[in-house]
Amino acid sequence: MKKTIFLFDMDGVLVEPRRYRASLQSTINYFGRIMGWKELYPGEETIAWFESRGIISEWDIAPIYIASVVESVLEQYSNWPIPPDLLSFCEYVKKSGIPKPEFNVKEIVGQLPSLKKSGFTYCDLVLYLIETGPARQAFGRLSGTSLLDSILQKSRNVHQNLITRVFQEVFLGQNAFENTFYLPAICFDRVTEHIIDPQLITDEWNTTLKKRWQDGLVDPAIITARPSYHNYPAGEGRIEFSPEADIIVDQLGWNRFPVIGQGQLQYAADQLGCVSVDLIKPSPVHALGAIGMVVTNSLLPSIQAGWDLLNNEETSFYNGFPELDVHIFEDSPVGIRGTMRAVDLLEMQGVTVRLTKWGISTDPNKVSELQKLDANIVPDVNAALEQIEIIE
Image (cartoon, rainbow, N blue to C red; front, side):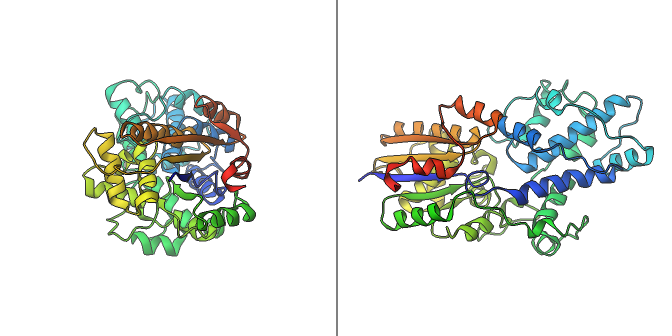
């Protein structure tokens, strides 16, 4: 019997990530203020441009953008000594009364490739490309300095990266941050934690989708880059297990649907001896894990099997899998690319799969990239659901 699976990205598809966006804005502006400037956030168009290039995580966008600002300042003041870390740099800029630089971030970041190297966050990739040569020109002043390391290294750990620490405090709020990471608050944002992300899926379609699931007609699942809770020791400072996807799951009432976020992937990575970036989209393992969860209701075996496929290891996990009709709903190319590769791997295992790609965006940069993948372009998830016969 054929099984119809809906794979939903979360941010930009099911909800408008205002809290994340507000946290990103507050984080970038925080560093602008301690440099003596009123604000530093570049605006939504620039953030959408980052996402269109596959840089979709706030834990990459904020450090890369701030590194670009620092590079621009250092280029303008080439006789400056380079401070050892980001906080020292901010204090030096403020003390010197340096005005905010006018620069085009696309001229710096545009020299860098989209994220294609398995096992690397984008921040890690930039550091690797600087070390090996290809990106040295983009960050000519910062290349090889401890200042750049302090901005980009360990971008998924609040104990080791100041930008990530500020972002997590802003997003979670002082109490939740201190209780989760056992660190004192430093920026005391009192507004962002109260922001509720508006639903992009209407109540009507949300109800209809749950009814079709109860009727056995469709199986929804979420594949998200958000941190997510998993009952597993988080380890000191790791953001992957922060309960951020769970906020939206509760809001939508999707607690009975499979969710694979960073928490589930990090848990699996620890068992498999890899890193979570090896498993998260655009890795096909993210989609394979969700598909396996829908069919078998087993988390670790599903991710293990996807990891085995990716590494050309033998697996019997997919023996007896039903025919699959998979729909992927994404607002950026990253998840679609990963799902396309996942389908290729499943077909190599003899599983019959039909894939429909829904590109959900009105942003010209994103639409252009989504069209390159032959995605059906729609303005929102509701417009996509209206076109699917099984849930009409």
